[in-house]
Image (tube, rainbow, N blue to C red; front, top):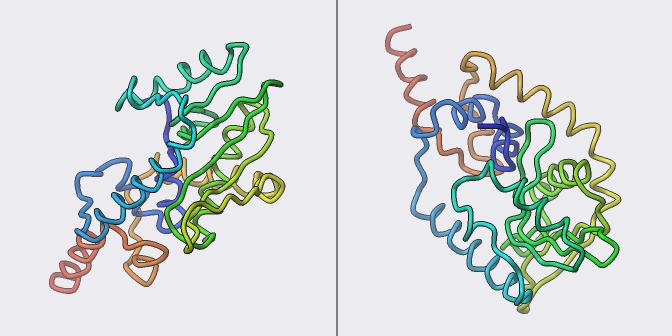
Amino acid sequence: MSHLLSKSKYIRGLQCDRALWLDVHNPRLAKYTREQMRRFDRGRDFEYAFKATFPDGIDLSAELKRNVDAYPERTAQLLDKEEEIDLFEAGFSYDDVLVLADVVHKRPDGTLDIYEVKSGNTLSETYRRDAALQHYVISHCREINTFSIVYANPAGGFIKEELSAALQEQHEKIEKNIAAMKEIIRSGEPATPTGQHCLEPYACPYQHYCAQGVRQMSLFG
């Protein structure tokens, strides 16, 4: 594996260092509820609906599937062509972080319009953190023209909110976060206790594992 972090692992690390470590070293321990799986499905359906507005888009996931480390090279090959192009799941890698952008539009001048698609109907702080990481990585690979989060309009359709300037301001913080997460990944499993962070902003799929450890300590400690 040529990268240590992805979007999902970075967001996991902001929530809990132990969950990040488990996500890298023992992801088979994760347990997702039916509601979480349904939420994933709703998110994919919303994303597909937005991608349908780019009828000529090239879906790298259809070509490369789970070979995620191949995405950046294939993305670069396509973006280096001298024409406008729309890509789905375009890959970019920098600082041991790999991100796959939902929709990338290459403009005639070679700059990129990035669209990160979220199925919620509000622009949450977690969405902003996700987008900020992508902006950090992609901007070190290509020149970004605009970066928008796309989310659901309660009345129907899509809301696009352009956030490039705000995301740029987060780069220094993101660089520090990445460095700290790399240290966590390369060290032993953290002994982080359970708490409210297990539920916010998302229910952690490792709660059962960490809670079992707490019960064992209370029995044999």
